[in-house]
Image (cartoon, protein in one colour):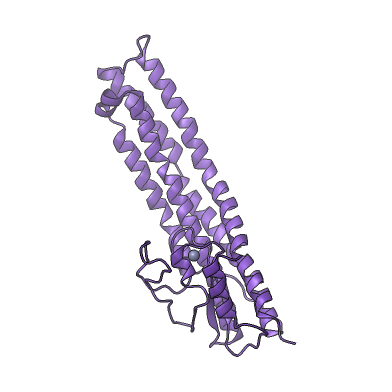
Amino acid sequence: MAASSHQIADSASRIPAALRRHEQQTAAATTRPLAAALKAAQNEAVQHWVRAAGARQTTPVGDALKRLVQAIRDLVTRAFTGAGKQAQRDIERAAFNAAQQSAQRGGAVTTAMRGEPTPPVMPTIGPEAADAAAAVPDAVAEEEAGALALLTTAALTALGLAGITRAFGRARRALTRITRALAVATTSAAAHAVRAIAATINPATRLLWVAEPGACPACAAYAGRSVRPGQQFPGGLSLDPRRTRFPEPITAPPRHPHCRCVVIPWSPDWRLDGTPLPTLLRQHARTGAA
Ligand SMILES: [Zn+2]
């Protein structure tokens, strides 16, 4: 007996939530060391300022100011030491776990659709995830340089303690860059693992887009669309043309950073009971149903 398309759509629509949980947990773990190092460095920097500012709590001048600025710059540099490379390794590991989980869940849905076991694949993270992780050390270094550029005698003279706060605010942008790269890497790796499953089943197996429940209007427009191997999903789709659209064609999710849409293997030859699966996924995305 064929599986019901409703059941398949329900199982497939639960995969993005699992991906989201994994991404959020690993994002917290990946950013924790640098976040803690920056917090400690900022506390120490404030203590330096308080000591240097003396009883009247005014920004020091001359050599005292130069020494203060140098001491704070050293604290920033020390907080960032090794952070970019560490984040890259953490992101690669998170992407691999995402690929493994995705291969398991995507494989289970595929087994249900075909009514026969899905051949096992050795998950790999794929080039998109590897590129996202590899770009992190430079991104982190850029934010470090941005923070250091704000730590000058002129800036501290003009802003006092607020100048230190501003520099550390800039330094913390590195955490946002890491989180975004992690999001892109995990979603890309998940899609890459499913592509490998599809190719193992049959070189002609398609990839079917499953939007995250509650997806943005752009992602919702891709729900239920499928592509043949080597084909790309078109760019520029959106259910709401007034909102931001993404013009580039893509091979798979993510459509944007923090997109947790997924793909599943799919063939029009697989017989399912009920409404065709692509139609159901499209309806889910349009009505916001989970
Ligand atoms: Zn999406």
